[in-house]
Image 1 (spheres, rainbow, N blue to C red):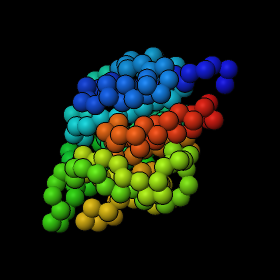
Image 2 (cartoon, rainbow, N blue to C red):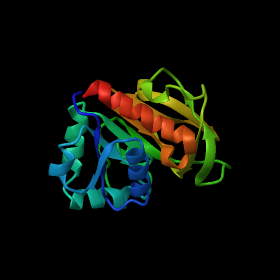
Image 3 (tube, helix red, strand yellow):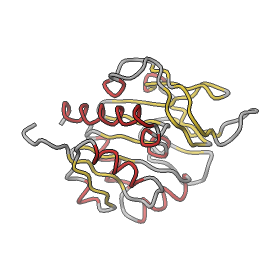
Length: 209
């Protein structure tokens, strides 16, 4: 790339942690816009989908902003994409959390934790990569990240799974496909490890745009 800085677009759908994600990437030298306008988000090098919330409220907000199809097209065109928390779950077809259909980019559903484990799953937990990927470069072999969620994505194609975490049962805490990476944990809440993860994603984008 001839440009020094990567331009990132963060999808604004009134989720609670957009600004902390923006702050982290700005700290790392990226040019960041936070927007709900598809014409602005289409001009970025990579799209970031962060957030906490519920399935139905998120999908309704995205639909109201006419962002559903532009996000689907961005991913289908194999442009660099990072999903965080809801940004992973909404890639599936459906969710036990509500009635609104998800993006349906991958076969699978979002399930609620069952059993005796406390819900939500909140706090630090170990992430076990199942294969190599640039986003895990220079991190501990089995790093700890911060989680806040009651539901988890369960893709049918287990080849999508990039990392797993154990919380009562083993679930996919990261997936990847082409230029897409999506994680259940919150790098922006995970201190220096999370910042390194974001730095690795920026390097991944530089190689793939």
